Image (cartoon, rainbow, N blue to C red; front, side, top):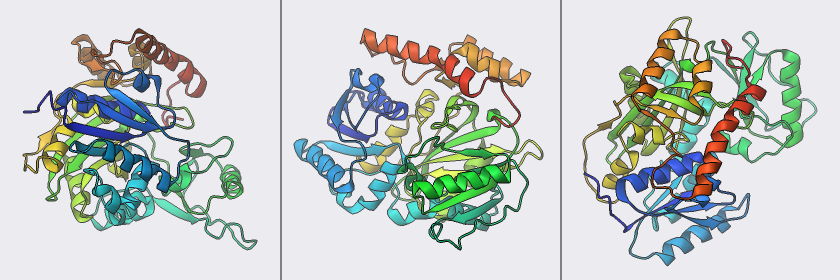
Length: 416
């Protein structure tokens, strides 16, 4: 049972997006505590919230400066049960790099740097999965460390176009700024791929990019798994969801905006095996796609953090913060908490969502969930009393119609 008035708990969360709000909401639902957000430009949903305090930092802050801010917050709140959370590759990498220093001030539900390096590099992750006989997409690694030299040539692509291209490590790519930047690239020809290589070289990219076979199937073939491994190495939290629709804004593509929770127990077991094999600790979020041609589950990546859409677990009555607090703050061994309730997590209007679900049986299922009142938005929390915040959230939701009309006007087999 959780303590809904545990005001000694102090969650400090780096970042300021929807996922950060979801983390704070889960803490507030479980413990009634306030949270501190450390961000350069938090959303209005956070700034106008009744349970967030904001510590503003400069954009692209360096490690030393961010460490000073976090240590300062810890020093200003002696005796509190402090937990540090983050929801972005840049910040989870920062925590990994500075783990020992931060661990003297905060409970850290994150893996250590060596584990982060092993699982966040998508090429390394693919090798780990191969050793465990877990399927991943066919992948070619393209090393850009010598790309500015005149003799450098990109390797030949061994599979047919269209293909998917993305950075092997999110933090190495997220720090770049260039026109037309996308989180994931869908490439339809060799000419288009060569143009991307030249763009990356011009932007100063010097890490590894991946080219992967494009797995067919729309967004509804994607799966998400959220897990927590406690300090003993036991997986004490697991849950999953079927993605219904993803964001198609180029900077956010791949982020689910609607999901229905569902227990995928075979995938849970594969996730457990990966976490155990890498001596993982803390929160993890897996992206998986089911290949409609043969039903194979292909593991795309694991994020060493709780994930942007983390609140779907709380909506499904498996609040991740309770498991983590019992482990790291209360030093308790607790049984596995599993998300088995069926709910709809959504950031878009129901009418828009239903238009993009092409499978009749799945659409009927979602309609039934909506009809019985089990559709929830992480941003629509009944304790929030600020009228302007409510108006902003409602307008942002309506604006999804315009966004999808611009970036993804009609559903397709390949979702691009």
